[in-house]
Length: 357
Image (cartoon, rainbow, N blue to C red; front, side):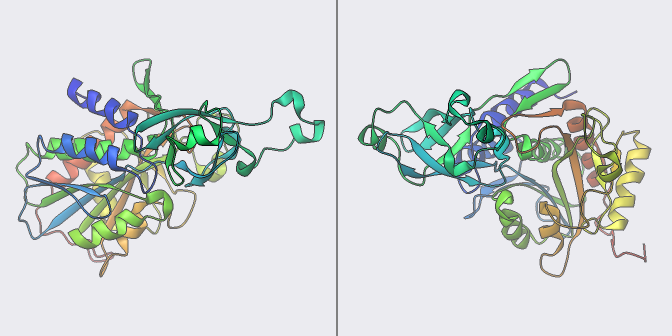
């Protein structure tokens, strides 16, 4: 069970707003939490935040969870005072109309709603076609362009309104679960390891700009130069209607984190994770992912410098890249326990070269 202080941090992190490239608020919350148990905490020029436990070891292990989220950016203010925008990351346009948002301005968060022509005024043909993003706008209640321009600047980032909430005993919903839930796992694993006797240095990283091309993982991993890298991200829960299990496999909320098997995952490290899970009776789910390589920070970390032994742990997620996503605390707890026990078992002499382990 997660302690009350950890759950309070989880809520704070989820309620932060930080679209890709504008993660300052989220980085601040992450950095402040890490200070309680890390020997060193810093944020680099990209915006990645790093906490270090057991510093000084030549054998470094890196944990990465990206804390940027999908969002929008203001590109134009109309004469009516309406804001036109572009996507920042992969947006599901079907979920956008009517969405409550917050524009992150120099004067603070400004509430708004994404508007479109009312259904009553659409032709029958128009009703069958999803609106394009450039046909939508953000209404902040301004009376005209001059009124809006007093508080909104071109380029201001836009986030979905914070909406974190517990659902029953084990489940949580929030915007930006992808992948602030992974950043939370990184922080909690670092906290758990801080009270263990370690033989390796551990660097826990909240990475930025993953949604724009794994950019934060590229720079942070190069700087840390780890021997081993774990990425924690969300994965597709397939326990909802109309998901093709023959393509994506069977993944259920609450049945444990996903361990991946594809080209991004070092096979020796993968066997180590599964051995530790069996030893400590940690429930997990197997997945071959929906692609052979790429899509998460794992891929970027693996190719850093001369190569890193990497593994991806995924937290099952419903409704990914929508204004509200759902995860299960039991899967989060399982990932934290598995990572903690795996890293605590390292001697600093491990070799993860495939075929000679």
